Length: 220
Image 1 (cartoon, rainbow, N blue to C red):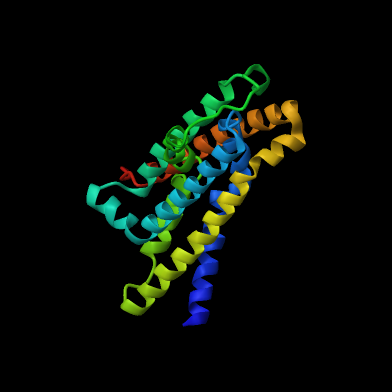
Image 2 (cartoon, rainbow, N blue to C red):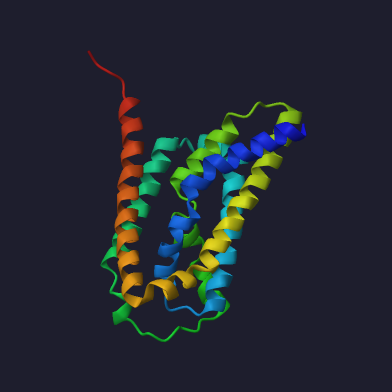
């Protein structure tokens, strides 16, 4: 049972980590929190990691049932989520440069910081439709007997904890990246990641649309 659990944990991590990609998400997080002080940024990173853990485990355990209840398919989730990612990336791309902003770090209270923790920083920028789709698929493909269900839920929880820990580490210390790059380098990275975010959004939308088109009945 231990070996089976270890294999399941590895499967969860190997499937989710490349899609969540906290390393690639760190510059985006940094671009949205450039004017926050270090303590506020780390508080926000901690809440995003917690939100991500809850969202991944919920998607794994009950995601398929929720979508079935509302009659929503995974391709539709991809289209809707991809559009949100696209809009978020476009907003970042049009955002004024960091050098044109107030250079003084903005002191904000906990309520202001945590207001942005779930949307857009957790969903869709960290745990997006791709991650949710993978988690739902993993959960739906698990055997439905008591022993394997317990093992799969335990593996999903442990794997999600590890992914959430990497999210916290990458986001909490994203300010080190800014110090290394400097203002000009940070602006370049922010614009580049914003453009990539737009491309990712387009790709997610296209993946969903492609599946929807394939599901249409063929008339001959």
